Length: 273
Length: 282
Image 1 (tube, each protein chain N blue to C red):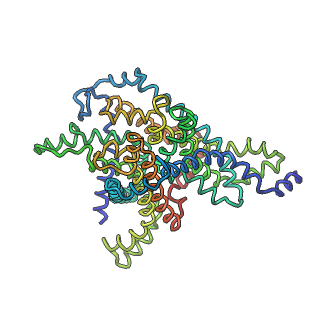
Image 2: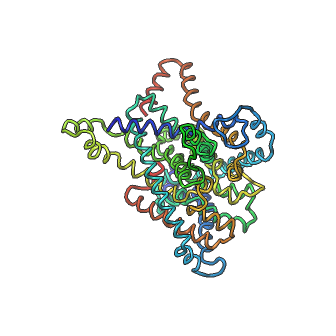
C-alpha cells in the first residue's frame, strides 16, 4: 500500500512540475507556433515584448490597477479588521460572513454584475472601474491574512506602553504598527497579487483603454498564441520563483552574519512554529 | 486617563461601527448592488419576465451545459484527489528537506498565474508538442487530437486546482499522530485494512476540505475551459460569457449566473453547517 502511494506520489510531482518548466525553453524558441522541442533558440521574442506597446501598455495598466487596488483595499480592511478582531458587538458574525462573501461568488457572476453596473456610471474600460471591482475581490484575502496576524497579537505590549504613559495614538504608532508590519505587508502583497492575476472580471470590464496583462494574455492565447506569450509567462514565473525562493535564502544568509547563538535561537524557534 | 477609560467604557459599541463603516459602504455599493443588479436583470431583460429562467432551466442546450459542468467538476475533483492524496502522502514520508522541496514546487504552481499554466498545457498537448511527438516516435501513425477537447481542459483544470487539494490534505496528514498508526499495527492492522480503517478516516477532513474547494471553484471556471476546451462542450461560465459578449442576452446570462451562484452558495452553506467555512480558506 505504502509503495503504491509513494509511486503515485512521484508521478504526481512530475505532473505538477512539468507544465511550469516547459514555458521557459518556449520563451527562447524561434518557432512561430507552439512547437516543442523548439527548432532553435534566440532572444527575439524578449526583444519583441520589451519594445511592443501592445504588451507594455497592458503590463503598465496591470501594475497601476493592482497598486490602486492594494491602497484602497488596505484603507478599507485595516480599520475593519481591528473592529472585528478586537471588539465584540451585535452583528459581528454577520459582518464576518459578509467580508468573506466575495470569495464565495464565482468571478463570472461578478463580471456579469460589473459589466452593466459600472457601465451606468461610465466606469467600464477605465482604470478606476477595474480598481473598484478588484478591491471587492481583494478585501476578503487581505482580511484573512491580517486578522490571523492580529489574533496572534500580544496585547500586553500595548498595555505596557500605556501604563508607562503613552497615549492610545502614540501606542498605536510606536507599538502596534511596528509589530503588525509584517502582517500588513503580506496582506497588502496578497491584495496586489490577487488584482494583478485576476482575469475574468478584467476580460469583461477592462476594455481597450484599461486592458490588463491577463486580459491581453487571454486574447492572445485565444487568437492562436502570439509567441510573446511564452516570454510573458516566463517573466511571471520568474517573479513567482523569486518571491518563493528568495525570502528563505536571504534569511539564511542574514542569519549567518548575525551572532551564532541568536541565529540558533531564531532558527529553532522557526522550526518549532 | 481614568476619565477617558470610563468614557470609552460607556460607549463600547460605537468604535467598531465607526471602523467598519467605510468598508460596509464600499461592499454595499460595489458588491451587493452589482449582485442585486444581476438578479434584477435576470427578471427584467429584455422585459419583466420569467422566460429567462424557463429557457435556461428547460432548454436542451442549457441542460446539457449544466450536466456537463457538474460532470466535469466531479471528474476534476476525483482526479485532483487521485493526484493530491499520494503526493501529500509522499511528503509525509520524505525527509524534511525533500518534503520542503515538494511543498515549494506545489506552492510555486499555486502562485503561477493560471493563464501561464493554461498556456503551458497548450504547448504540452499541442499537435507539435512533446506528447504527440512521443506518440509519433513510438510508431503511432495518427495520434489523437488532444488540444481543444474535454480531455485537455479537464487535465489543465486538474493541474490548476491540484495545489488546493494537496495543501488541504497535507495539512491534515502532517498532524496525524504516528502513535495511532503504530497502535493500529500492534493490534494487527496491515496494508489495505490499516489504510481503510485507520489512515483514510484520519485524513477525511482534509479530503472533504480539498474536494469542496476544488468542486466549487471548478463549477465557476471560465478561463481554462474557454481556452482549452471543446467549443461544443462548454461549461456554465463559458456559456454565460458567450450569451453576454456575443448575443448581448443579459437576461439569460444573468439567470444562469444566479443559478450558478445559488448552487455554489448551497454547497458552501451545507459545508459551513458541518465544518465551518473559515477553515476552507484558513
